[in-house]
Length: 263
Image (cartoon, rainbow, N blue to C red; front, side, top):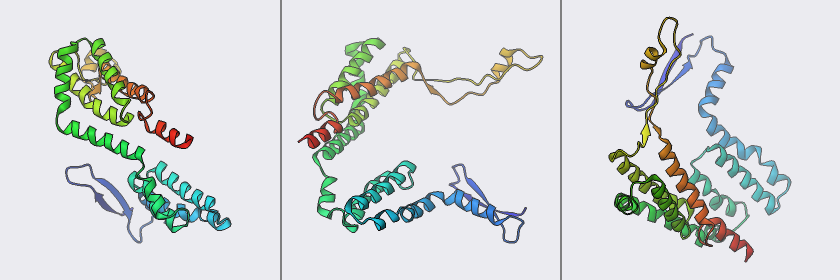
């Protein structure tokens, strides 16, 4: 079958090659249609989802059903990642006033609540800390004070993460601590106290008449994988931020949201 080749990708990247059947070839209409759907399936769902859900606001024009229509569209877009998540999150700014669900003033005000501003502020602080290379200095100071024992270091980092997470969001606390943990692991690796990443080899099964060890030497190396120590440190940071967020009202967005609902 004669095909036309179309390559999509930069020269330094792996190009994605699509084979489009030429006009007049033996390819059926179904093959061409399946090829089109496999390439543009996201765009098709973006267009068809509002049309398929359109009976909801048509059969009942109450504000609750119109809101359900918007929520279902956003849920499908969000789960399938048909559009960038920030774009999907901004759809209510356009759809709510357009469909008469909520006026633009109240809709935009919901995006600038105190909880959201606290979350954004925490992320900005984390970005500034990482840009200023402060984690490297904190890592060296922590190693000097606590020592090179993995138990003491892990406990100290867990305690610090819990304390920070009590006053900023869990995501911001984790974002601030991950570069510090990475810097500490690099210092420990330089001191010969542990590897950040390890290389594992693919050991193919022994062939007839060949020693298994000899065959294993020819195994290809996989991409470096995090060591057990690295996984332990990162999991400790993640769980510590979750525990610390339960300590205060401003520790996590769910606490503030519950307070707003309760009040």
